[in-house]
Image: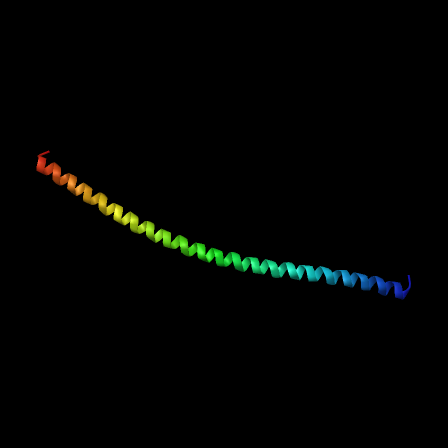
Length: 83
């Protein structure tokens, strides 16, 4: 194998490697964009879950207040009826 043949073979390999690196670079850029989008969606979802959790806490507090009110009314009615 002559020097020129070796140089041609090395050039072909270099071009192939360059093509692969370019493809990998494009893949990494796309993955980075995807991760940023997913991260933004997760932050939005997390905020929504936190709001819903606060709403549920408020509802449970109100519900428990109604339960206590109903119990006190029941106790009062029983007392008035002489039970």
